[in-house]
Length: 228
Image: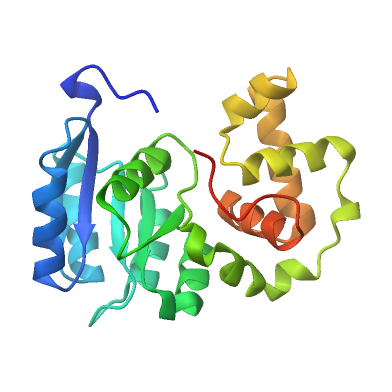
């Protein structure tokens, strides 16, 4: 993925985790990444909301939130829901462990852009931040299939409800392509691509591109690993 060429284009990131050692570890690594700028930290959901509000007021709104899901007080799922409602331009990436599949599902339904495992390699985390910022969907490949099976409501929707073009678009969404990339691939306008995505979500009873990607995995329409 092409990195920004100027400091003005650095990706602003906010960390949310109740474990100080986790935040310190992530902070220490992210501060060394040229195209990422750490602009805030919080230890629970309410603190995350307050931190973002203060950053927005200063014109320094984060582009991406790395959100722990299990925290005291306001948890990550509730914080994700409120953040995406109040600040739809901020991408929230859930940070989770293998044992929290139900919470991942809830976070995606609340508006999270994707999820990463807490034991992911450092370069996976930075790549996930970039993907989220540029409109792609960072998905932890190791739990994608398990999570996809959890979408019982999506499973009741029939693929044959989609048109041939919508089926093509769904496969590309599952591959992590943005609307602009889908438009280029299919030689259609970006507006038309966006319309197709909206129609797909409506027909399948889904709320986000990430849910659509997981549905495609569940139906065998896409691989369980994110694109390179």
